[in-house]
Amino acid sequence: MTDNDRITNPWQPTDRSHTPTTLMEPITDPSGWTREELEASQAYLYRLSDAEITEIVDAVARVEEHAPDLQDIRREDFSLPVFGSVLEDLREEVINGRGFVFLRGLPTEGRSLYQMAAAFWGVGRHFGRAVSQNHKGHLLGHVRDLGAEITSATGRGYNSASKLGFHADSCDMFGLSVIRTAKSGGQHRMCSSVTVHNEMLKRAPELVEELAFRFYRSRRGELPPGETDPWTRQPVFSVTDGYFAARGASSTIARSQGMPGVPDLTPGQKEAIKLYNDISAEIAMDVDFEPGDMSFVQNYVTLHSRTRYEDWPDADRKRHLLRLWMSFDGARPVHEDIVRDHSQGIMEEGTVLHAPLEAA
Image (cartoon, rainbow, N blue to C red; front, top):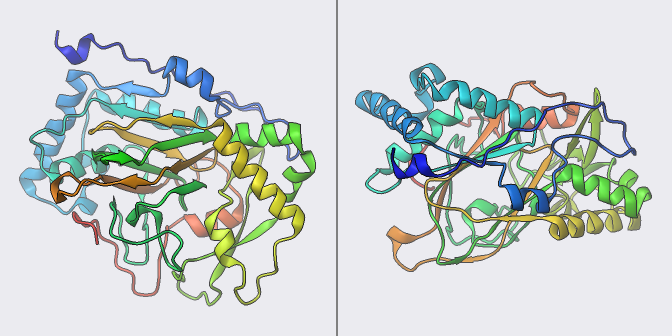
C-alpha cells in the first residue's frame, strides 16, 4: 500500500433527490449546501487512488504517442477502464447532486504541460463537451495574469490578477486544473446559489422577485453571428420545468449600463443585486488549491469568485490554471435565454475552435 492509498478519501455523494421548485418558494435540493457542513466533512473532495492515477497517466501516454491536438481527443480515446465508471457517478453528482467535485492527488512533478493538459482534457471529456471560452475559439483556457484588468471594456477575469465578484461562467459547467499557485492571494471561493436564494427569501422576499427580471448583460465585445446588440438578456433567478438556475449579478450587468437600448437599473434591482452579492460573500467557502487539483462545477447552482493575487516574479513559477467550459447537452432543464447563450459558448463570425497549449 502506498501513501496515496493510506489517505482517507473524504468524498461523500448526496442522495440526488429532486423536489420540483417553484419561484418565490424555499428550495429543497442537495445543491443547497452550507460552508459549515462542507468545511467539516470535505465531502466534495475526491482523493485519487494510486490505481486511478495510473489509469490517467497511462491514458495520457496513449494519446501522447500519437501526438493529437487536444481538441481531437475523444472520450473513447481516453479510456479509463475502472475510473471511468467513477467519473460517470461524479458527473451525475455535479448535474443532479451537490453541484461540484474536486479531484486531488494527480502528480505534477516531472509532467509536461501537454501531459497535464491532456489529463485534464481527457478527464473533462467524461463530464461534458468543451465549448468556446472567447471569440478566439479557445476550448482550453489558460488562467494567467496577462496584465489586463477586469474593469476594462473587454477585460476578462482569467487573464488578470484582479479580484473577481461572485459569478457563474457562460456555460453549463466549468473545470479548472491547477498547474501552479500564486505567491499570495488568488483564493478560490465558492457558494451555493440555492442557499443564497433561500437566505434572500428569508431576509427580503420582494428582492428575490426582482432577480427574476431578464437583466441586460454586456457581451464584452464578443458578438455571435447574426447579432448586432452588444448585450444579451438573462434572469439571475429562474425556474424551468421545476429546476432552479441562478446566474451571477456582477460585472456583465454593470457593464451593460449606458449601452444603446439598455434601461437604467431600478432602485429595487440595485438593492437586490447588492444583497445577492453580499450574501454570496457572507456564506462562501474558501478552497485551497493544490497543484494537480481538478474541479468540475455546475454553473446553475454554484457561484465562484477569486481574491486578487500577487504573482511570482519568475515566469516558470507564475500562477497557472487550465480551464474548460463544458456543455452537458440538455441533461438538466435550463431557461431558454441561458440555453441560447451557453450551448456553444462564445462564438463570432469566423471563429475557429482550437485548444492552445499556451496562454494567448
